[in-house]
Image 1 (cartoon, rainbow, N blue to C red):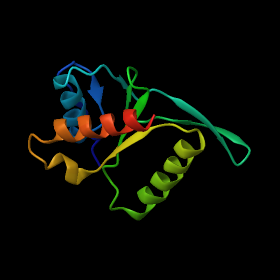
Image 2 (tube, rainbow, N blue to C red):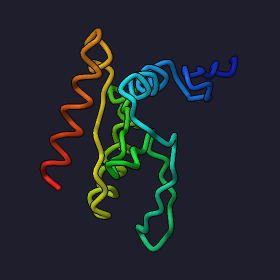
Image 3 (spheres, rainbow, N blue to C red):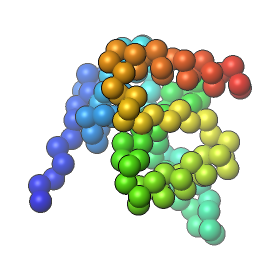
Length: 122
């Protein structure tokens, strides 16, 4: 079994997948500053855990999670748990899925629409 090849964004940083690279490049194209996998500490079941959301947008205090393997049952369990932890901590997260990447040029608009929606709510 070979190791998965990591992808490099237009900013020159290494991310875990081509999909994350697409999201990172989209954020760059939009002129949005982001941090990749900024740690978030949570407490559950009497233990401390560190979550690594894919992207953090400091100017909006919003995280972005790309759920690339949402079709896999084990992954969905982890995904549900992470979403629960985010809600518990009142962390704002934009959720992106593989079908969003097929929007061919509309991903930028979708991300901005989701950011604006969250900012209005806040």
